[in-house]
Length: 421
Image 1 (cartoon, rainbow, N blue to C red):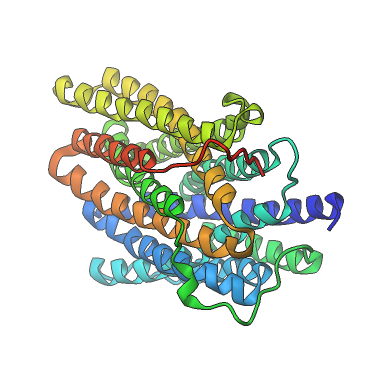
Image 2 (image 1 turned 60 degrees about the horizontal axis):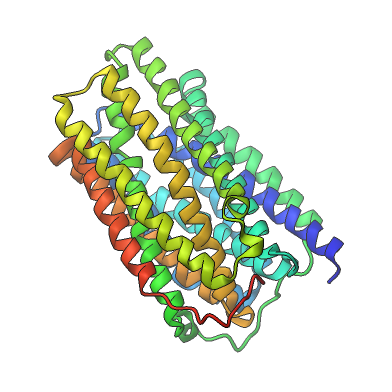
């Protein structure tokens, strides 16, 4: 495949992934804020996302095999199509249903959305390994651009979701997103990106579990890294901000929705920008794979300090205040920057370490661990906030980052290997 053909396919896959993540971010904010305004507790809100994350674990475990068996294009189409179905189903939610029925219904639809998200994610990330040029650190650059831009787009989705909820309401917003994503799917099928693996009939499900020690430890570290983010990100911070910003009136709720969506959007966009810039920040072109692993340890150690310091600040504050809120915002922006470099290093290392012949299997296994981390973080986010407030959320995040640092410390790459493939 020529570089021009590979670039065209990369653009098509990336554009589809952007559209998907825009709806994914918007949907998360729509569900969180809509059901919080209906009186759901932090634990009940966490339940709404639990099946989404469980579906991610199961999907990633099998998605690598499905892509190896049926091809990356098929799994990408399936991810987009399932998200359209999930959005259409969510629009059928009846306000007259009781809380228990609503929770079960939304959990189920979110589970379908989780399957869709991870099919699309595994397909897009695996495609980079196949399509990226090999010269001058091309792999790190291309995966950083894909991952960073995806998170910037998801951040816009948070803002979009909050704005749509405030202006148009829940059902209209969900239907509009379904229509846009359907158009994107039709366009992608028409373009038919070339150069992606078409699948092999002999692929066995038993191949999913990696035998590579480094991939297994990297997956372990990824699990706790993303658990550390979601333990405050999913429920804790949005509900804390809501308690500070809203007076309970309709106008107060609307203002709080915009403010929360704006913060979540800015945090995620800046996180994406730093991710995309990570190769330049780390001077990756002049560093070996082994040296970049060393950088992963350094940046993981730096990350531990941020949530630990914020947890102490919250404990000593004596309660919510504008001064504390400003400190939390600044601290979490710093966390986002350091976290982004960690995440980008992980995303590079998994593709660099993966065997090209089983890239979908290794990437699927790795993102299974990523989804498991999000699942644990999601459950702990509601639980820790209800038990100990924001301070416990942040302290738990610090502990999880430390465990991630220990996992990276178990990885070993021989000095003779200098692969920036």
